[in-house]
Image 1: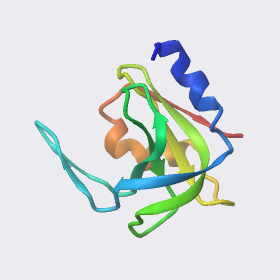
Image 2: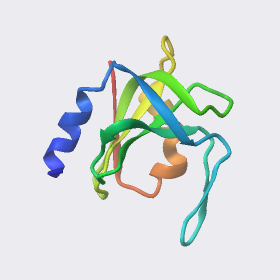
Image 3: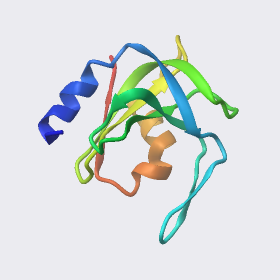
Image 4: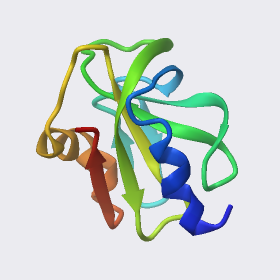
Length: 122
């Protein structure tokens, strides 16, 4: 996928409610080559929708305090990664809202390793 289409593709999801399949629930440990990530939030993907890496589009799910397997939530932000092949979506339960700063803090456990920028649904 050409890089310039990534952001435009993702903008169509802002404000929409989607079903997210969680493959890295709260507490999941992802072992990397030089470190391990412990997921403080649920993280998954939208089935059948491909992201910039050719795999299903990843979504951070905020606003829950327990692990879930599948969840319908509203897309509230996009995370643009300048130094990666894919961008991410951020979702939350209906009627939940988060500031840009709250989102950045919640996803920093992973985004600290990337040059990323968050665009929030207004």
